[in-house]
Amino acid sequence: MAVALKPTPSFLQLKKPETHFLLRNKPLIVSTRRFAPMASLTATRSLGIGETFSNLKKQGKVGCDIIELGVPYSDPLADGPVIQAAATRSLARGTNFESITSMLKEVVPQVSCPIALFTYYNPILKRGIEKFMSTVKDIGVHGLVVPDVPLEETQVLRKEAVKNGLELVLLTTPTTPKERMRAIVEAADGFVYLV
Image 1 (tube, rainbow, N blue to C red):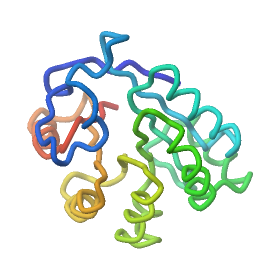
Image 2: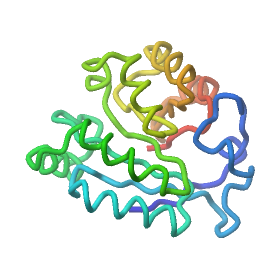
Image 3: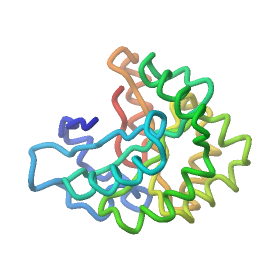
């Protein structure tokens, strides 16, 4: 699935270029082929590792500016029923963090755009924050989306992410109170993911 992101001054402005790892090598107008940057979601949750590998390579070739790669999790509370079902199927096929990192070691050098992992906080804690961040950095991933971590609890994750050259993408929704949305935007190192 590909989504065009609405280009807004706050999206395109690199507030903190030293910690904006997902789009730091892109011009301020991210794509010359479109009016808006494009992110694509690939769910290892429903595809097998081989299909995911092939799809990631294709997405880099067709002009995606960022690829978001979903890591399957047994309790994906921030996802809707379609992605929850995809996660269940993927886990039943044996997809896990280790198989995804193994696949990414091969595919990242062949993809022309940055990859952000969409994962939940519990798998990060299970491996240890430092070890998880180091592993993700070593395979060439550029960022993380962790939907179940509230802003107030992101400091440790952000510190380790920056230390490893990763961008922690913060999320907000259209129904988020304006004061909280402002705090999220101010805390963001790069762009904010509007759910």
